[in-house]
Amino acid sequence: MWKWEAENAVGVVVIIHGANEHHGRYKWLTKQWVDNGFHVLIGDLPGQGEVTKKQRGHIERFEEYLDEIEKWVKEAFTYHLPTFLLGHSMGGLISIRTLQERKLPVHGVILSSPCLGLVDPPSFGLDVLTKFLNITIPKLRVDSGVSIDKATRNDVLLSENIDPLYVKKVSVRWYRELNHAMKMAHKQVKKLPDIPLLVLQGGDDKIVNKKSVLYWFNLVNNKEKVYKEYPELFHEVFNEPERDEVFRYALQFVKNII
Image (cartoon, rainbow, N blue to C red; front, side, top):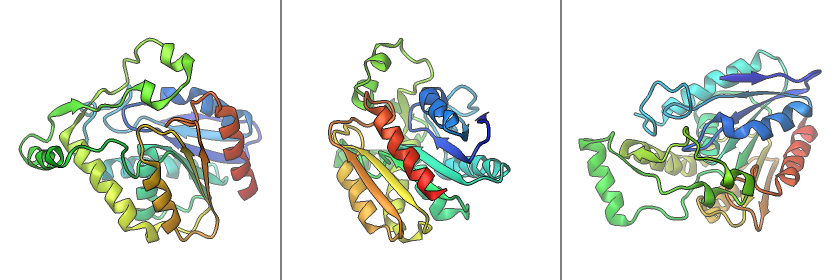
C-alpha cells in the first residue's frame, strides 16, 4: 500500500485498481485528488502489481481482495477524515462486495465502469469447461483476452512501451471467483449500505457490459445515487482523453458530500 498526502486535507480516497493492472497506472488520478486536498491510499491487489507474493493472475478466493481492501480502508480511517472508495472495473466489483460483506463506514463510493457483467463472456461450453478445470487444475492460466486498446482511446497510454506488470494471463480459479463475485453483487444488491453512490460508465465500453451495470444500479435502494454515462468513452473513463471532465464530476460529487 502507498500513501500520498495533501496539505490541509479534507478527505481520503482509497483507490482500487482493476484486473490485470496495478497502482502505477493511477498516477494522474492520484495527483488530481492530492492537488484538490485529498489524501490517497492505493495498493496492488493480490496476484497483481510489483509486490505480490502470489502467482500473477491467480487467487484462491475472491475474499482475498476483500481482506486486502479492508486493511486499506482501516488505514485510511486513521486520518479521521471523510473516507471514500473509488473502484475501477474489477476494483468496482471489489468495492461493492466489500461494502456488502464488511462493516466499513465510508462516506461514499465511486464506481468506474464496475465489472458487473462482461461484453464478451465465455461461451456456454467454455464456461462449463472452466468449472471442471477449476476442480482439476485451478492454476491453469489462459489469455485474459483484454488488451489496453480495448480499455482506452488515450494515445499516450497506447503508445507506451509494453507494461511488464500488466497481467496478460489469468487462472481458471481467478475467472470462476470473478464470475461468482459478479453474481453475488447482483444477488445481494440490497446489502449495499445506504451511502452516496456514483457510477461513472463508458458508453462505448468494450470490456464491461454497461447494461448489466445499469440494471444493478437501478436495483440499488440508496437514497443518494447517481449514474453518469459518457457516450463515446471506452472502459477506463479516468484515462480517456476526456478524463479532466470525468474527474471534475467525481470531485464535485465528493465535495457535495463533505
